[in-house]
Image 1 (cartoon, each protein chain N blue to C red):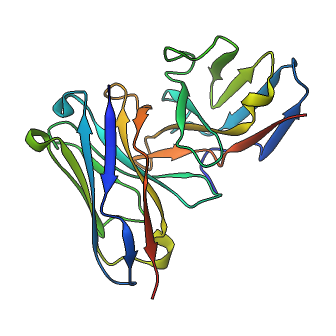
Image 2: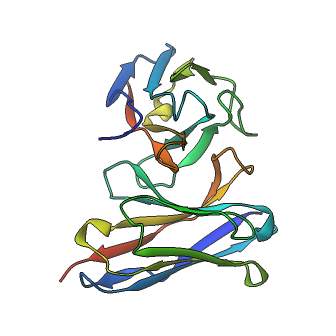
Image 3: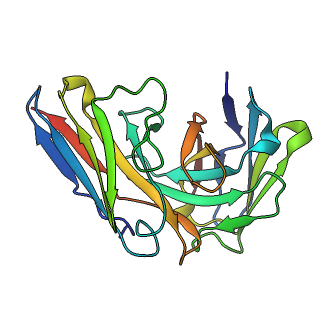
Length: 120
Length: 110
């Protein structure tokens, strides 16, 4: 069974840093592109970043470019999102998401999500 | 303002058919696959349709997807009260180099 379990969320002050981690199981991580998607409760889905299986290809949403870093450790079955210089508008639930098939950008497995609150 | 445009809400009676539209441009829907997701309140999104018109295992054939040019649509037939949820379309935008979603459509089954 495919499982994605996020951790690391919480309260952080504006300008601060936070690392989100996604532990995966039930599949070979290196075979899949992985993404982070966020959602403010009651609002829509917003894509944050993606990373190819070998980290050759990485893309970010303009809103987080230069502040967030996606990385993965395939041997440890983990995908991380390093968040720096966070802003109030980064407050959301962050989902770790698996792409179903390389190059098609559809998401077939979602983690339960981890809340991040940026506030002073 | 989302890159992909969806109606904020749609409604129909049980047993009827409803169609949710998703409109984009040449750099997103015009050249890439569309996928659709369903999200019940307080739950995580779920894949409904991928590669324009394919259903994952477990999704009934009451749900169907289509795409033509820069527009896509999700059709749901035989509506049930259990279909009430938020529905999102998504695709890759080759210009933005980003995945983009529609703003979501709330389906109400009257």
